[in-house]
Image (cartoon, rainbow, N blue to C red; front, side, top):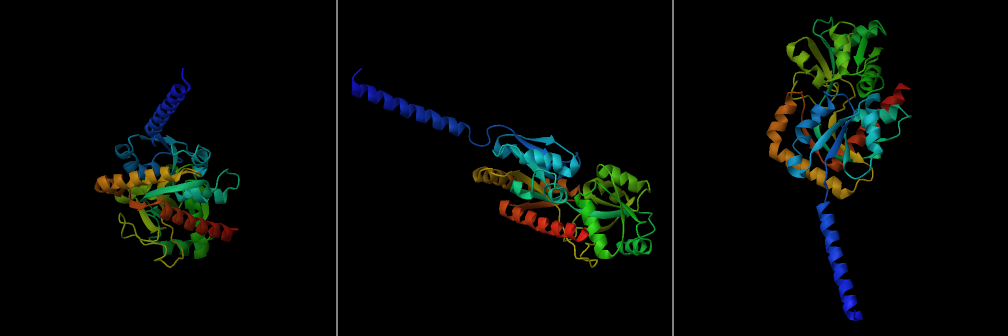
Length: 322
């Protein structure tokens, strides 16, 4: 073959190969396969807060978001699994202050920290509250505090586990109130509420979703919410701040990715979430309302700022508890 002809053929081949490569890259544009959303708790809380949006993301992303339940150790199992996953956008974690903030602060043995993740978006605001039996001798939080002050350690409360977010928030509250409460931990919100309904504890600190039906039926009474504002689903229930305590901790549920996930992937996910909420906002809001929750959409920067605020709150709280 003539040298010039050979070189021309080589150049043509290179151009063709480059075209094929670009086409292959285009075909692999994110996302090109299903995304797994790791839920670090048992079904019924975090998944319920995210499902109204996650199930509809396929319309925008073209790929399903599949829930992968990895409960255990207050959310540490699922969060740790996600932190160690490839930072390619195909493994996300259903995030909340409990698993991403409280656990790494309270348990130095876990292999991740809050900054092991890249915030993608918050999707909903649930709520944490203090509840008692409707037939309890105290009808308000003030009466419960008075009882605990008169009999230190005799007023008990249940939570979904030791050193979790509900446990720590209650201890921080009790310290500020000058009341000594006794903690009875359980493996999950369900057993913790069952103990309360059975009269085995005086109060429970819980997420709203598992307590919702009991609150609506009147078998449980809400004493206060931990958030910074009253909840639309329970407008009659005061916040701790309204009752004179310097504690306000809204509970936002969202999505985070492993640290190092490319910015363009995060932006793609955030854009898809916004479009999904724009399209289905009314239905999403109605579903969340049945759980005592509401839509709370924050982008990567705002959600990241929220997580840092929570980190400062709980770091100070843990320090005060010794």
